[in-house]
Structures are given as structure tokens and as C-alpha cells.
Length: 189
Image (cartoon, rainbow, N blue to C red):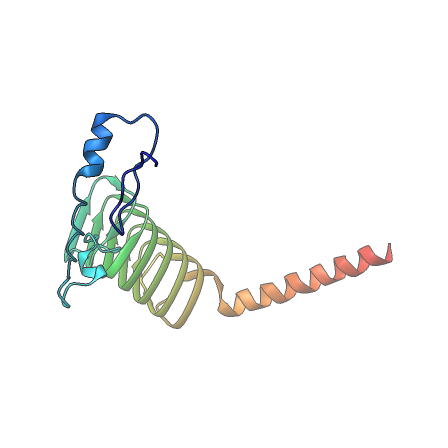
């Protein structure tokens, strides 16, 4: 005869070897019950359980008035700059008086006694100012205004324009012809 205990059907035989009393007590304890299933109501989805994120583009303020200072950029519906330096302006209406601006992107833009690098707008009014480039539907120009490049459907007034779209086209044609001549002369040499 053997000294092994007789086991009931379905029982697991004990392991042989050294065993701590703590392990023996843990193995004799009943198995924990399976956790209950958690149900999420149909209205809550993974997207609604995710943490809320701030919108990528913050809402635009209604109006910003900026005077005597410097700022990197302004984005608002109505922007008015007086005697200031601004890197860029974006909004519906933008006006600059005696200021320096890197760029304006607006539906309506007005520059008076200022210096602006570039303007992209639907309607532009410029008086006694220096503007490097203007791309617009309609441009109204006052006295003593200098503009480097204008691309517009309609220009009212008498601006001092360095290059309009016709001049730019002619300059590009001359530049292209010169480049072609230099290329041909290089290949012959």
C-alpha cells in the first residue's frame, strides 16, 4: 500500500516538497469570485469618456486697440494699431496709423502714415504710407503713397507703384530670356 491520500474525483493532488504554511493556507482558501461586468450606458462612448481638450483655434475677440508698443501678432475681428509695431494682423477689419506692421490679412484694411510689409485683403485703403506688396480686390490710394508691388483688380488714385502685374510679367519675361541666353552660352563653351 502507498501512503498517498485517496482523492475524490476532480480534486488536484498536493505537491510534494517544502511548503510554507502561508502558501498552504492560501491554497485552501476558496477562489475569489469573478468580477462583475461593467456596463456603459449607450449615450457614453469612448469619445465622451476621453478628457476634454481645448479647441485648436481660440475664439477671436471682438476688438483690439493697440497703441505705443510692440507685439508679435494680433488676431481679432476689429484691430486698430496706433504708433505701434506689430508682426502680423489677422481679422475682418484692420487699421494702422503711424505704425510698422509685418503683414495684414483682413477683409478690409486701412493704412495711414505707416509702413507695411505686405497686405492681403479684399478692400484696401492706403494714405501717405509705404507698402511693399498689396494683393487685393480693390485698392484706394491717397497722396504720397509708395507701393512696391500691386496685384489688384481695381486701383483708384495715383500711387507711386514700382511694379504692377503688367510690369512683373514683363520683368519675368526679360529675366527668363536672359537666363535662357546664359544657359545656351554655357553649353556651347
